[in-house]
Length: 169
Image 1 (tube, rainbow, N blue to C red):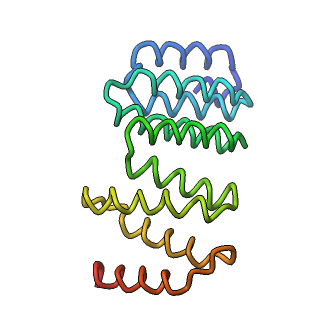
Image 2: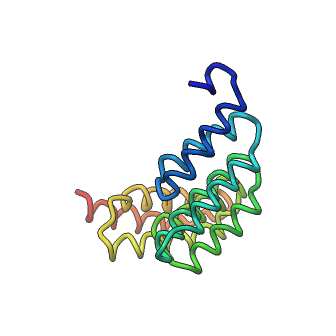
């Protein structure tokens, strides 16, 4: 409410209070980060998410939260920082989301499909083992990567499409 009324100081205090009361609530962390980003304070948005990520208890939770940090960094144009964050997240706990985010970062933002393929392969491998619902999207992204003009791996892409059709008739 304060935010929509343009009362920045009151909105700042409200978000600070919320973050203090609910430090483990992902919705509060994301809302605060969004508020700071929309208030042209991107550094604070990243800081909120970094604190949230550090407060996570397990490596998998920390990696998932680090993926949120990297997304915020990417939104703000800090692509190299996002890459470092995602590499750290994958070293901490290789997850489908962190591997996919890194592959996507290489493919879309950094325009480097050769670097994207191994991370998308890793994401698909993890997704297969965990029966992740993200598997169709991952396989689709991997095929798109293989068809990129820089790689142009048509035969491998055909194999991937055949495997995709067998898995998802």
